[in-house]
Length: 552
Image (cartoon, rainbow, N blue to C red; front, side):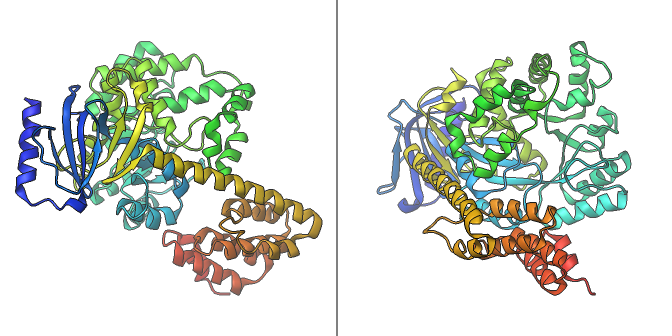
């Protein structure tokens, strides 16, 4: 019956309007995994027109327009929906390439994204102008004592924060752990009125059931049960009760096994972190990500998380068995061992090891993600299936992922918003980016040698222009500038931030940092001008706008 449905849709789509060959890509004679069920459609052809799938049907029946691009499956390759990572903290364009190169075509940023990524980069990606996964974004709100995000202490401030996030284009509100009950209720009420789903951590100041009933629609990590429902000494014997409450309240859960497993593996174990840093894929990380991994505190922590790992796996399997919707997420890229893209494939393998079938695990990163978005944001493009009318996000595999989930690693190509990229092209792009990273790191070493030999003033002049296509990285100079600022070396900080502005004039952050240093130097007029430029480039930076408008 399923096959008949696809044939009818395919024929209708082909007859309904003329097909223009230059807009069409045909994926001919594949084993299609539509993810409507665990059935595979053998010898099936899929037609893509721009961003949309327009036909899915038997290879012998679907008419392929002349002169269109044809990708052949030869009856052997597999075609699955693009993957969705529903918990990331990615806000750099360079990381988007790594996601796509691993078959990730949708992501949810769960907070701390820089404003320009939200208002500019993300829009360009979602419109298909810049390569990357279709991106949804959540605005992070915490209580006190805050962790490292935006926080509120009064309901009226919580309401204003949600309204501001809505104006800036965020789809979600991410409620972090320590929001007060009054503020959490204000967040949920305001967000509901604006059509913004509330996702996030388990609330430490509210009963688990009450948090879900108040408006939390998705739990960002399954481990959050440890800090909420199981916090008062409950053990695995209480899993059925936790699952029952979850099901009754309609909560969706992002498993995020990869984050907890990798944290447990390196908790208090420096040798494990050292081994992670030796992984060949580390060279593909942005240099600042590598530095973040190397400086991680996890390996220096006391105690062990090892006993909780099987507890978490059992909980996730129990949630699946009870019919609780599960999503796949990774928390990439900040935690050592979770590189963008590759970590989602690890997540799928861990879900299977926890007891899910390959189909159930793959569902978490495809049909469940699409169903979750359709349920909470009904006006968004549909995705998560290989089906007519859905966004043309696809992954080509050499092996059957429903037989062995490890076959998600046999990727041979990706289709993102209708654009087909073979593995060879993606691999080449990643290699080129990695070579640039290495050249930038080498340039940083030259810069540091010049500082010792010639001093900052001359070095800043000598490095004020790119060397070919290579320039000092924005994050590198910013970190040096703030190190000087912290050491009360204000003049040097101003020089470093001015160099950053010259090399990266498109970045709001460099102007914000320069403004801070100029104010510290006593040059209020120049400082306010720098903040004004930061606010111009990043409309989400209300603090920069406020400082720019101040009078003496």
